[in-house]
Length: 465
Image 1: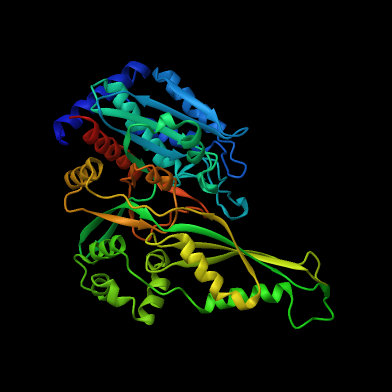
Image 2: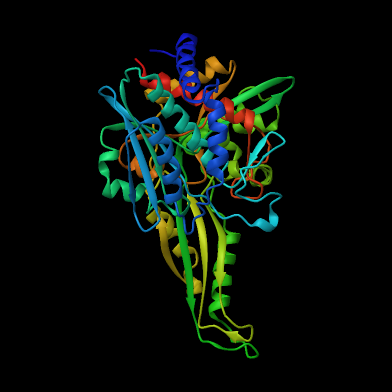
């Protein structure tokens, strides 16, 4: 059935009854979600090494208390994965996918212990609060709501919490697809990380835009290696392994890849242009023309590097190594590049272009990791549910298909033909610091609570006839 206020009230009532029965006092699932997230953030799953078995233990305790059957598997010692299934009708299954690993946090630059789960000034702080333990708990709340309601579902709903996304997913979703393929059999829809809501003030009115990630730039991680004659630092030669690497990096820096606007990016920017009367609005409405102006591209990169990254292939220089001693010219030097390419051509074509650019420097180009491009269309029941529910809950809001500059585990599931979207309905004011992969990662409690409620409404819209 379509989303309606009656169905929302009915399911909320069932949830409240369950909470009263369990605790003796009324407690909403949003209250539970806040407590779960604080507890989850306190669990150290930094990758490397991962230790995602700790997240498996966390979810196992919850599923056992709820009487939900689940399965677990370790892809390597300590690299835990967990999944559970609610059985329903014959429609293609919906998967709620999350990763449980997080990136490291440097305590020297945080104002709180990174795994405190501290509630301060209306925010939950801690590594993973946004990426992506908060979304994972929203998935949990939606999944448990369906279980507690006990109403017939039109499809199976599968909860999957996997390892290793932050390092490429080989010990998580990639491993599960190869070794536990039954998890994904019969699946047609999937929700993952990658998109959310944003709020800006347009005059005196709020403008809420929900971005749903339908594709992502393809990661192509490269290592450049140079070998030359070693020697003493006091007697430099005309070339060395280090100068070859420096020359290659200089060529790449001075020759940015040409801009091009692919269809999903064009649709995204056109959506951003709606209602804007400033210079940005005019440019966003015709990005194919706008990106021909180098000054516009430079201004866009300065203002919003993420949006700029959607206009071209990019490479960030992230790691380098040369000599282990200051007075030794090394025989070998290397540099690593985090390249992200638009999903409209095979990565081999991009790599060939890089090799041609640096050919005269004598460096070798090695591909460390690369994925295949894939785009999920927007004609699915799930995308329609996102549009319908957000329109009803947030009147005047808009839903835009978007392209992510980062990668997620959705590339694995898109390769299997599963329509996969990156989306969490949490709304964040434009410009608000979230600390994702940075310092003092945080999530606004009230926005999180509303996001939990909205996620449940979207999932209900998909699974109830």
